[in-house]
Image (cartoon, rainbow, N blue to C red):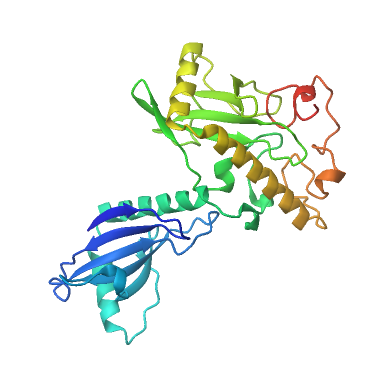
Length: 320
């Protein structure tokens, strides 16, 4: 199977796929396929891909013919998910041969393709406020910043290299609707190590309003760690390499921060009558942003660390 990437501006991303099966029933026939994501919800972690199969001939044009087969597969469970009618013998034969002839390499490629499609859909959300995020189900400790990927599992993560080694950056935000901070915590980590098994090599704070980088300072109660031995010269290397690989980072970070705050504000509005005793958030979810301070604990002193986890003093962050 050969495929050629074609990104569209519609609700799905299509890919051109050439299919030749070894099964005797289809061995002398050639097919083209559009591969897409049946699920366009960027919050959903399902692994489904849909296929529209067109038969190819010397005088046929895919653009002016209807698909001969339609079906979906699960790239994680590696199985057919479409329900096929008993009387649709040819579709049953085709899907059986298709699944049977998929090798390990194909499944890995389809999983990567699914991830690419969902990443594109996440980046091109037309109406973020149409999404309903249940923040009570997000596991985040009190006073810590929220990783964007915790809400959007397929958010774009830009890889970059420093001295020949591959790294990735993960962005974390204060998502209190009442906080006016414009800082993002960026954690740089080796792509060779799972994110839950190793602390970042370097963590920095970036103010997208001032376009200014600063060192991350651990606040009381924060579990964020980093390698303290990284020289300042190497710290600058990480920032330079990442910003070079991600030239639109200022616009994108500002956009992500706004989306998270708006989604959390919408969540508070939807659940205002309810009491959220099970929540571990710093912010009081039982009241609207206009009726509650930023934290449920007593108000911090002006020189105390800001409870949002930014590492700044309260008077220079949420208490400004």
